[in-house]
Image (tube, rainbow, N blue to C red; front, side):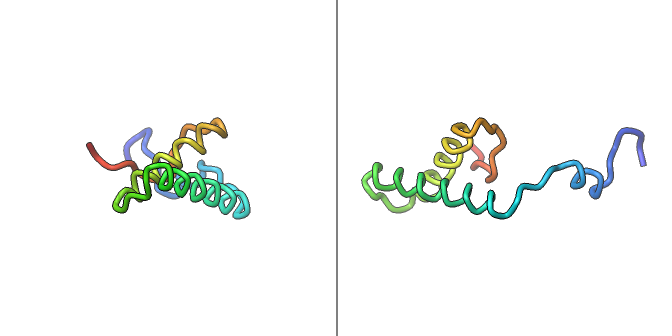
Length: 75
């Protein structure tokens, strides 16, 4: 193994995990925000992923977090 590279197990061990209740609360907050965006956008179908990602960005920015949960679509 090259110097400076880490095993997969070491990388995962470094990342803190949040309690399940917190994850559920975060998911619920994002779902509610995404639904509000869906309604505000005229209830257009086919925008669910865009609404979810925007809601995720908004909720995380309100909480002061910068890390996104989902991977944004490639441009």
